[in-house]
Length: 310
Image (cartoon, rainbow, N blue to C red; front, side, top):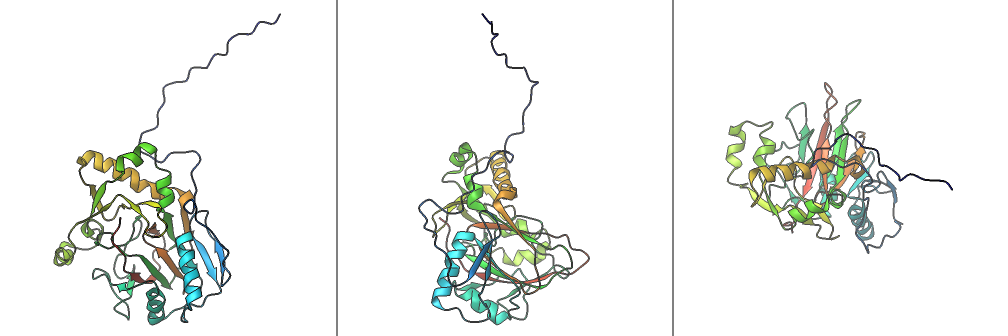
């Protein structure tokens, strides 16, 4: 007879990982909601750039008017991939505005410089500091934040200057369940001052305070078309969660901000002059990388007015 000894679990020294960080291990990488029917694209070629976000589009000339079928398929691609890239389009400001106008009324931002056209914002890091090195969604300090934006690079540095986008629905999917329950139905305050005060003096911002008072939006927004839940707070404009003590609000916001940092939820794009990116501001955050000094990088952006988040 062979005698066996009970298995003994070896003792390990005490250990812990600080709470409220990004968690290692497998991620839920779901690009579309359950029940969404995907179909092939027949009017252009779509090449995915990431698992859940980002695709290059070939075979569409944005300088020409879009027919109804192509516009509809691009709209579907935007919903399914959240950010679309078009190589070397070299659009005029009028053509860039015309393309963006297929998705709704255009809006301007009085806090940004403009190019040759008053409806086209010019982001020239060598002239005026702009939003770089921070994850954010555009103009969430408005009652109706932008639906999306069309960005074209006019001048590209020889190295660096990439832009990253994060899928904030995937970011939501991977929150711990207790955090999802804690922020369910919560609302947060958004204000333009924290973001813009990083590079504008008070006298530049004060005249706009009445036009842009603080606003409240859901912490978790439902996309108006796909229905997916997305994290809708960002490090540039969100100041606090309503009804929470300051310490708990700060702790939750820090955790929610960090979700954009997971590479599995991201796509990174290296620009060429004349490239165009078109993204869904309701579903994403983006991050412009400022690693190209002393070279110049000039981008021009057209923003599309959105609706009130729910």
